[in-house]
Image 1 (cartoon, rainbow, N blue to C red):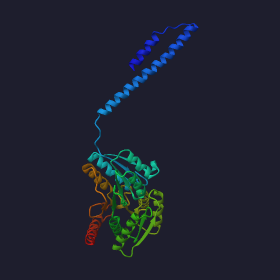
Image 2: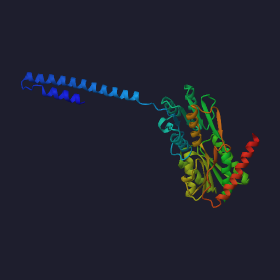
Image 3: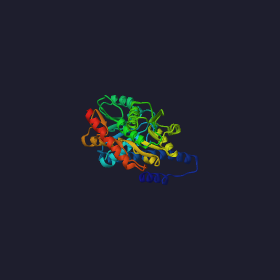
Image 4: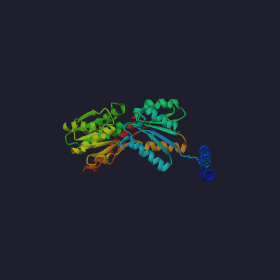
Length: 358
């Protein structure tokens, strides 16, 4: 730029100014050539800058970190449940393993397929699909990119480049149902599901079985919100159940479940959270949560990628035996310590039954 200004100054200083028509033509001509020279000088300066940048990039060391791309499900971050838990696992992998990550939410991509494709094209080493609802789209993308590694959480794929992870939600929900039956004063409890899907049915059946193991005559209300994304609808369902004397509610409904927990709190009833420890969502209502350790799953597979440059393939199941699911700390209740001991006893019974069955 100094050279440009210097040449410009020189042209101006050496240009004669005359008042006659010939002088005007001369000035116009000079102005024209001034513009040409300035343009050429600016172009030369820009080329020099670009060349310098290129040289710097060529000399800079390339990142050796593993890159992980995650497609979040339904409401994305802020659901205080499934998505937030997976993101927590990514942050831990970043801090402890040095991975770099990126993510997409359905609100910005419109379709799971588009978001997953973007993550592939961005060069991520592993693509994670969080939730059963994106199985079809993830498999479409995985077929297009057979050399890319994918991880599908909460559904099972037969594709060779897709590792599938599922949980035995019925085990954790059994404990949640037992806790609800031990806590209720009205002998009426409620289950709220998100959408009508096999994975949510496992929550419901486990909850019912656990409650009836404590009290065979207990009344269990059950309703599906039809969405994971509507806290208002969850709140309305909770109101209806409380009117029917339910005093302990269990919601496997994503962000819709947040509405259930908060409504229970506003009416002085109890609730049991899901996926992550949801105590801080409604501190006066949530006595415990059935935790699916999605954060640990994400971290463990990130660790495999970093250490081995590949992951365990096939179908991996997480349950009580490998600490993939569990109940969060029991709070609020005066007899929390006694209930904790009882639940631990039930947990050992379930593990023994599981071992005998296998």
